[in-house]
Length: 197
Image (cartoon, rainbow, N blue to C red; front, side, top):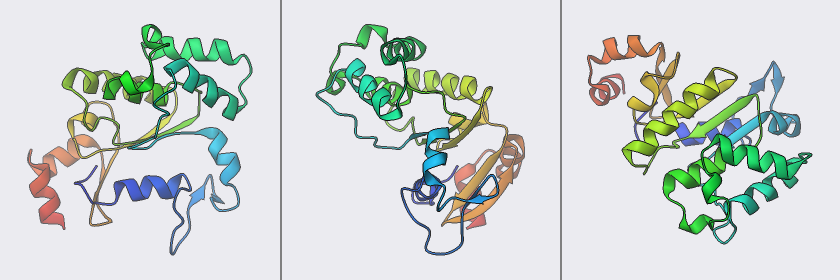
């Protein structure tokens, strides 16, 4: 959690090896990320802010393509199951450019069953109904695996996360449970960030 420019997306990119650290190292299960990137990526699901869906493909075609990249067996069955799980069965033949922002995000997270999910500001630009739907997805996914979610919208995390880290200026300003953050901030997260900066 943190204001725009706090370093949240940079952290997400470092964790998925989309950026390389200029100093220090990242450990995954006690092993350095560098040198083990390939094995990590098979265990990881990552939804960046702008994940560049191929606009002229249909939702089903895009998922079929992703299934091929992941080497999934029974790709057709996996695509149908994925569309059903994110409530987009009726949009299977719709071109991605015609989908709403929330529908595009759901296509982006639809495929695979990784043990670790990283979502980078997935609710930005979504209407309130879609945002509520995504909170339900985070909550459900978090019951079965580790989910790392970055956002600057506290409502996206306070009801579904059990641990928060607040970043400001690339530094950790708070780490703990959501209730402790709310107590510390006295209901005003922006002023909390400013006081801590």
